[in-house]
Length: 230
Image 1 (cartoon, helix red, strand yellow):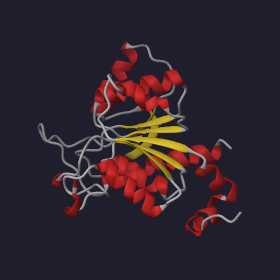
Image 2 (image 1 turned 90 degrees about the vertical axis):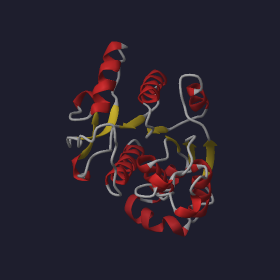
Image 3 (image 1 turned 45 degrees about the horizontal axis):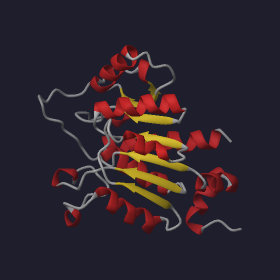
């Protein structure tokens, strides 16, 4: 069977068997902002066959500077609805499951009703991040969690590491303490910047190149994880 021509260039790079393998994978992405949006974009363009997209938010004017789905014509519209249409426009064969809600302790079990091959955490809530980490460790689901990307200007400072090896990240610091306090065991893979964030009081600044770079690095990690496990 011939592969779709849209994945021809990818096949040159990773081979036919790997492209077919990616079409059988299910990736859940929670949070469709600057990081998660670019991760979804690059996952679908990598031929992932099933995407579960999770977000309860709508596009806001403040998203225009960094979120791939945000344009003036879609302000106020559901992010999961917009991404569903975009994914289908890129690859009609991709199965999309939408969860149009914010995730917390009362509904997090809904995420784990699916047969997930990988989970990408790009949400903003620290409580939800911790619950995702805890559940993925307990259920042995491969995952990666994005730490903070705001108030930074240098995307070259990002790296994939483990939570215990992070530095200069207030989000990671809080999560490290919670993990220790709860005595969680296991490797916690994260995307983290070593750049010291700018101090802007209670404001969070962002740009068009740092959060997207984080999302692309996360997809790189996910895809290479799938390929190297074969």
